[in-house]
Length: 69
Image (cartoon, rainbow, N blue to C red; front, side, top):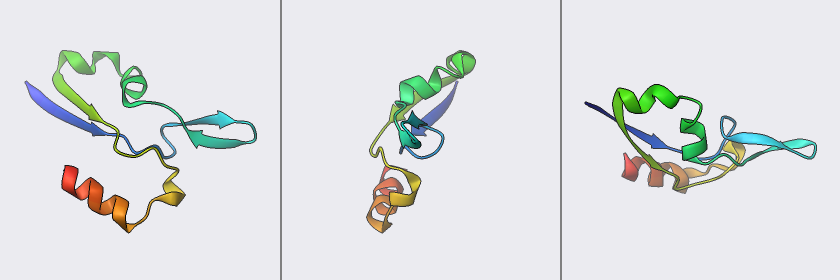
């Protein structure tokens, strides 16, 4: 069975409307809930090392992500 690593970092895909703006708020498990059949064709491991708006990602975050990969 194929393996999938989901590294959630916040950003646009995991954002929801809060007041007049968007803010990261969906967990990796909530994101995977949008693809319920995924578990039938792959093993999924999910991590959330960050929960930042993509405009707030800095070089140290890229290094962290590179280390996880």
